[in-house]
Length: 365
Image: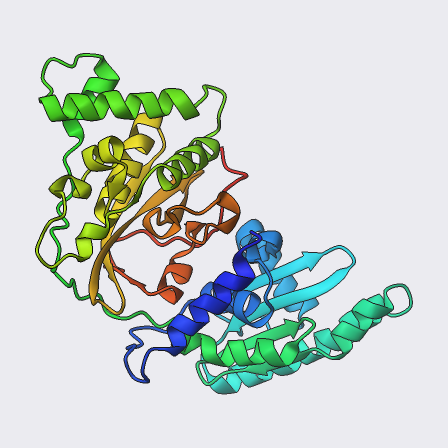
């Protein structure tokens, strides 16, 4: 994702604009979240371009890596997350969770030993990489985590490690209730699409079905993967509609159909819930699993809605409203993680909504 550096900086500005104490830490972020944050915010690297060892390797392999490669005592950790470049690039970020700050300090000491051994691996044939390893460091936190920070700017990585717990803390969701966020019922439309029987549709639903069907006919091919179908539909929605600016008119002049697929498909404008429900309808018709999340933004000051998509068993967040009128290269909210949504000031019911931990999904079927 070419956009990620600028997006990281924008997200960090959003986080920093919140007054101290506004975000309540309901739980310590997962090691995967902390490692992801270090990679993105501290190292300015795209996690999708790295191997997430904690996701790609089995438990036995990870355990061997932690004990035999990192030199940690067996059973001294409770969880771990590792991102690495592999090959002839030394870049490697790991976060290992232990039961106490004391145990984390001991784990960090072991990671320092790994750094020394890793430098020797590159000395002679990859001097630039050896220099990077030489300047790297290990650190630990009061939350009981130890971090391996092999990267070009270990100081920035360590700062991200320290700041990540607060930055990733989730503001408790408190629905603003300022807008009608009722989701348009598309059940009859989908039944008619599947069966071919339109006789039970209202005039409005029949029009929605016709317009949505034309969109699929325009952008979807039979040989497309689920990811390709999703991407094509996301591009169509964000390129063929605009945000209904009448939403800001306090005299209430906004077309109520901007809340639903009819307004977007017929008039080319909608508000967030209209974008989300239209995208979900198109995805449902294209046979790709998708849900609409009704949440908030701006620290619960504004009602907001977006989508989640499941590809190959993994959930991804997608917010077409905030990517509207952008070219794909500039999308900031297509198939991103829940943590990224937190950093970009989204709030929702964290207990009932699936957690998105992967990005993009382009290798999915």
